[in-house]
Amino acid sequence: SIAPEDILRLTVRDIPASTSYHPDFTQFSFVPRSIGAGDIYVEACLSMFKELGFIDRYRFRRRTLARFLLMVQKGYRDVPYHNFSHAFAVGHFCFLLLRIPSVKAALTDLERLSLLVACLCHDIDHRGTTNAFQLQSKTPLAQLYSSEGSVLERHHFAQTVSILTMEDCNIFEGLTRKEYQTVLDNIREIILATDIAAHLRKVSRIKGMVNVGFDGTQQEHHYLLMCLLMTASDLSDQSKDFNNSKAIAGNIYKEFFSQGDLEKQMGNRPIEMMDRERACVPKIQLEFMDTVALPVFDYISHLLPELTSTYNSLQQNRQCWAILDSILQEEGTSPAGLDFLQ
Ligand SMILES: Cc1nc2ccc(C(=O)NCC(C)C)cc2n2c(-c3cc(OC(C)(C)C)ccc3Cl)nnc12
Ligand SMILES: [Mg+2]
Ligand SMILES: [Zn+2]
Image 1: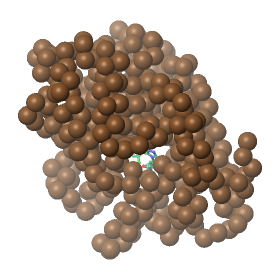
Image 2: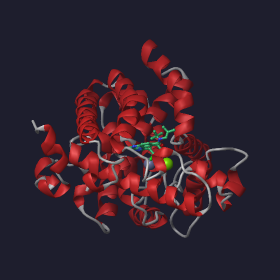
Image 3: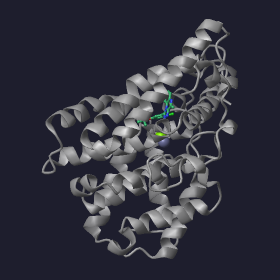
Image 4: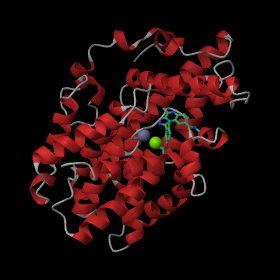
């Protein structure tokens, strides 16, 4: 175990290259970001579709799938957190979930296909700012979608559909009309489920499903399970070794604090979480772990016992944040910027 004061000093550099930690792509402890950058992502995505049997089952043309994946990768912006490496990490975790026998038994093949595609596409063209920012700043996206809500998520879905209409990028061309409609309906619902406000409204229904046990004859349970697998994948960075989680949190706060700076320039006062002068990162992380991340992995590990060790990693990470928080309290340092996260 790491001594508390050492946690502050640990940096991502101190940890041996994460591949030495995570020898195997098919383990939940694998750190997807450790595979580097560039087109290797597309290769890895192709092998995920292959291994899940989707290429054969839905007669994907490899060239079409490769072009689709390249357009998805290109669709992401170079922002600190909501970039393609986040999408790939989310897709990889989803890939591991979809291989679990009880998930294969619970969901239809179309639902599993919808989940993997939705994970890779769920944050396409993210600008590194929140839905609240879109509305307050009356951005073009807000002009488009403010009346429906989930502004960013509707845009992520719209971008996904537009890629499918591009030259030789429609991976679903081999599906029947009914299958095509079902997959697009699923992908829309799954991407909309990644709006944190929508998630918080829905989480009690997910808890209800966990209490009574998954019932495959209920469409509502299929829908709630897909949402739960999506949000767990979206949060999966927090279930890896603490240095990965800490580094990822650092990227998220780069986005949050840049948004806060922008809001100040626009004459608006950012909320504390976005204000680099006021935010206490470990405190926000503790609250986020307790109110959002831990419940998601608590529920999913009740449904899928294979996720127990993942839930335990989140709890360990939560403890690391608690230690960081107490150290910063004792030191009484000014609200911590991001330096200790580097
Ligand atoms: C490490 C980590 N810290 C975070 C700290 C705060 C917040 C935040 O938005 N707080 C304000 C709320 C409580 C009113 C989000 C954080 N977060 C996310 C995240 C999750 C999302 O949505 C799902 C997946 C559906 C939960 C959507 C967007 C994001 Cl950035 N992913 N990782 C993180
Ligand atoms: Mg999102
Ligand atoms: Zn995401």
